[in-house]
Length: 214
Image (tube, rainbow, N blue to C red; front, top):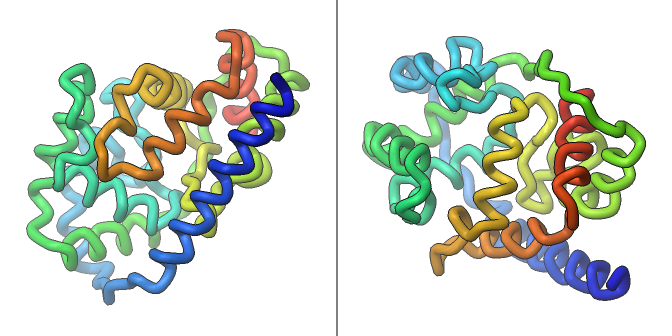
């Protein structure tokens, strides 16, 4: 079982690195000032400082990898993300992403978010810190980086600084096929596979607790 998990993990990591190299040179000139204006509708859920508002189901955006944010906004705009009928919050974000008229608008708002200071979370939950660290490093760390800081070369977003509800919801969405099932979502399908790596609910909780502590 352990050998099989390692093989799956290696294949997934290799896929991520390959896709990352293909997209590494795709950049768009951006205007932070225009992005600030475009960010105005996002404040209600994600906060003026991009720290997220858990009560509005809005994750933190400040400090997140810019390429990841661009990819997700394009995924929402194109229907790649939020296509599952069970993903009501994803469908809500499809409508918000549609407010960004084109690729330049996406790049501008992401540039503004990138100008905001990184955030941490004050969330804490009861968990086994040691098990969370071990499970994270064994199943998640190679892509998402040490302490969940993210790894752009692996197309892996920052996890540290996100709230408990969002982390738990997205892991569950991947595991249940709510997210990542669209045929064009290659990285999402990879994460569906990786969402089988934590074998118990306790391990999931311990990993989330560990990430909240970073």
